[in-house]
Length: 378
Image 1: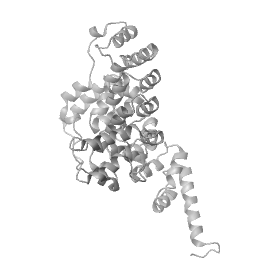
Image 2 (image 1 turned 30 degrees about the vertical axis):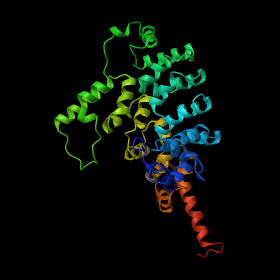
Image 3 (image 1 turned 90 degrees about the vertical axis):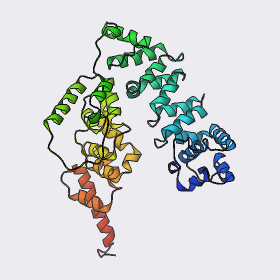
Image 4 (image 1 turned 90 degrees about the horizontal axis):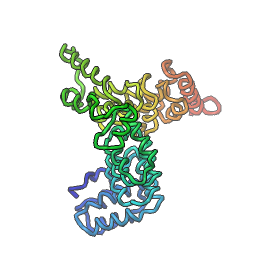
């Protein structure tokens, strides 16, 4: 299974024995047939994916056939999970080809790779082509998506035109795509080949490779910024401000923490979301955003709607304290905090008043329960 992009750690411990290449063949075949009891859909699909790389051709073939025959309730739950890894989603796309209900879930899952969406964009049905077009962040982040959508014979002309107009208005014109060239002429009144080249993320990252390509290790103690560093930062900022939305999104996706920090303050929500959803963003940065009173509302919603982020206790408590988080969400998270933190919130005047009041009410109820009906402590 050396070619498998996932390690055994992608599976829960009890399932690893069914995927380990050194395990007895009957044990692996049991996993390939989907006969392991009490397995969550997410884990079952991941297990089948890993076994599709098994050294034994019989195991590989069985795992693929099992995946292709999965009941709707299994793949339906798995494909909705943002915890399902991108390689598994891409593999399931081929196993479930021709099933629009399944492919729709693949397209809607944020964990699906842009490359998978681009692959689907060329052939999906009219309905699914509309879903591809509606994901504006993906359109600007990955050129091949709009390129393939323009090649799709099932897509309505209005869908293709809408996608092209949106891309061109946000600075993305591909000279090898006739529909985008025509959209550029339609919107700007000039041939894009004759238009002056704008600032690009690739050029900026090439010119400032050491500043924008690497996040580096843990931060050390603060140091006085040199004149050269100050000048470089100012130059980078000026050049970023000249970028189109599509180029800012590419920089937000590929750049380092400094680039993301700069672009998270952009006025365009798609740029902010590109920075927040970058595969390179760290939990530390997410905690900072959860604490921020100036964070873009869409970014904040992305964080508190993400189950993986909310499992991080530091992120969760930061969201509870943030006045920009909707009260129903903050109060729902409040009751999941540790008692010592709720007690601290009940005394904290810097948190929203309703959050503080609910924390006080929780502590009073807890104290009354401890004292018992006669006022004495149990």
